Length: 221
Image 1 (cartoon, rainbow, N blue to C red):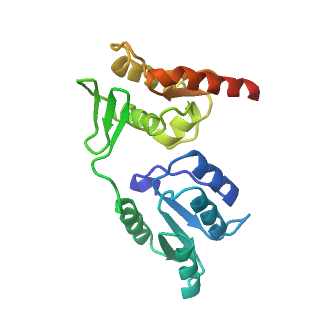
Image 2 (cartoon, rainbow, N blue to C red):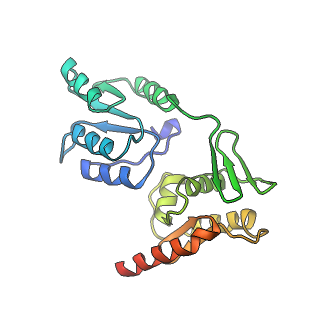
């Protein structure tokens, strides 16, 4: 999937899958029924119990009609039987991602707007040019506005790689973003959350949210 241009998080068991889907808004979940700790349908049930959530495709060696019907009735959007051709998996992934996709999609924080479809960023009346990774970080932060994001979360989402704890690449890109969308404006939108990472939020809300996040972080140490 990564070779096809998708950023992918891999969970090797149902508990980890539930943790991931609880913490991150995914565009699509591909769910194997044969997980080591629970049936994939149980994971699907818990995902759907919290919210409608992203489209879910089930992969399974159980290809009987009753199995497929059960998966779809439990909230799956598609059910692909093993073995399958990778090109078919990609085709189904693209179809699910197109289904109900809003266009154009626009994100907003205070006077900062980001048009996902046109890949355009505007603050106030000023159009801001961003490099691809800068745009990716800003989009991820705006999709999670008001939520503190760790450097690990940002690297794994935008670069689709494991964070080794040694690189300062996130800090470098945050400085670039601040120079473009904050430095020339009175109200600052990107905030450092001590002990956690970074957050984007409207000025009137950011101080209280940041204080709560820092207090929670201190309790962990």
